[in-house]
Length: 262
Image (cartoon, rainbow, N blue to C red; front, side):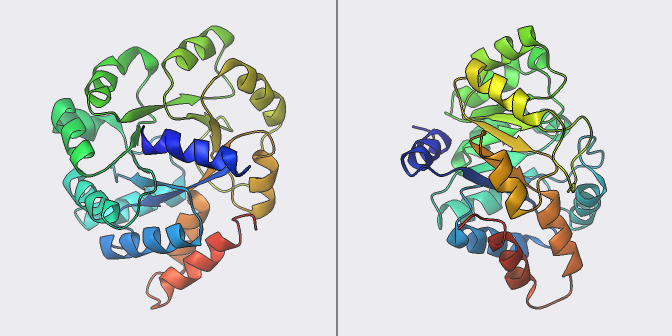
């Protein structure tokens, strides 16, 4: 069984919800990314999205865009992400996913990408700019190695499309809580609870919510109906605030610990 599915079964048995943390690989450097994953795993983060830096991250807000540009200057690429994932896999058994745009994956080669993702210990792939109509080749390559291609749903997704996406979904559904880009927000999107309630009746795999969650209160509120939440921009912003400090990992870890429900 894929680690993602296994983790959700474990969380369900414990009546807990998934805390999924996003980190841009190489921001501010790969060594720090590795230390953060290990420390956040120790604190109780359930899964990790390893962000692959890209020059045109359309779905991301200014915080993650800046982190991505920073990492690109450090010459972070897919091979370095795979190398990091392999080191992490030797130290932790929690689900590891990459989050990256399709262009680098396509240029890398779909079969080569899937094979190296498997050998590095990755469990899932998140590709925000790949539509359902265009994902068949990548999904086929990944499925050969037991790796999940995570599907997206948004507030604008119509009923017929929801059914189509639900039939192909593996691991969990990434529900984009807002129409827009990533970024921490003070309020949750209007109507989100009615939307999640409807999706829970239509989708068999777990539903995790991303885009805009940045506090413990928001996490607990959003997971009162959903199966988990993805937090990225708030963590990246905390890294930015502490770049250059020797205690960066400790400060970011304390921030994340403050979000994880006790």
